[in-house]
Structures are given as structure tokens and as C-alpha cells.
Length: 73
Image (spheres, rainbow, N blue to C red):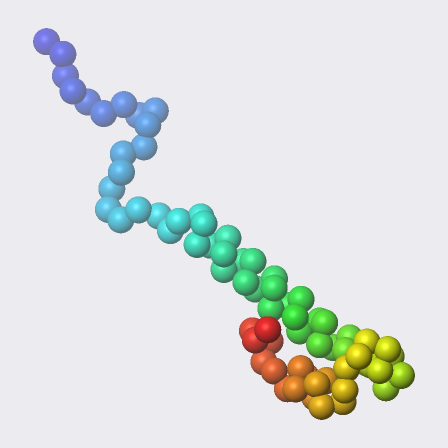
């Protein structure tokens, strides 16, 4: 007589599935992007007016960029 016992080498699915890795990766990449945007705005704030003119930016444009929160483009 054979018994149908579950194999111990394979996990048995119980309850809800674990969070999808893709969702966690998207969240991680969003955090990294926000950190990069904040860093770029810090560098922009440190530029002198001559450098800003060379880049084609006006002081009003720089003020708008510096006033944005880190998650805004």
C-alpha cells in the first residue's frame, strides 16, 4: 500500500503568496531615482550664475527646480 505523503524536498504553498519581487524592485529603483534627483538639485544650487547662463538656465528656472520636492521630475 502506498501513502500519499508530501515530499519534504518541495515547499508546500500555504496562505497568501509572498510579495512579488518585481514590485519590490520598482520601489527600490524609485527610491534610487529620487535620491539622484535630490543630488542633482543640490549640484544645481551650487552653480554660479555664469555656469547657469552657459547651461541656458535662468534664475527663475533654477528656483523652480530647487523648489520641487524630491519625487517630482
